[in-house]
Length: 137
Image (cartoon, rainbow, N blue to C red; front, top):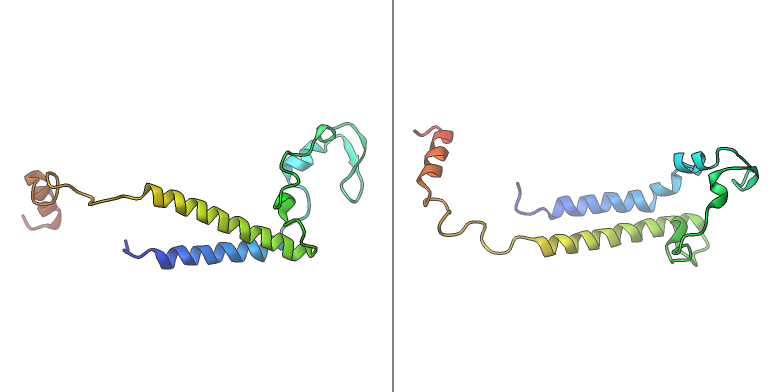
């Protein structure tokens, strides 16, 4: 494995930013499986508002974070829907990358991978196995 993973990490970050910022705007506007199963038994209009019947979706309530800055796949205060959705995706990717990178940084290995008692040359059995695997004995 390469000692420099940065090109791979930055490439993955760029792909994620592109997908979140641009491609996410072309996702289906139709309800997913959970939403459609909750609407079974109700009649809905063209705006997906319940107009009659009896279904579990009628008991739905707003989430506590429904008025947060990034709620409902958009950024509050941005009038352009395409820009709002793309910007929320980009912000989500950057926040996730920062959080994940911070956790990996905290969990990184510090110091040498082997100590003086178990390092190469101090374990004859390991040296013998390595030599056999290399075909020198």
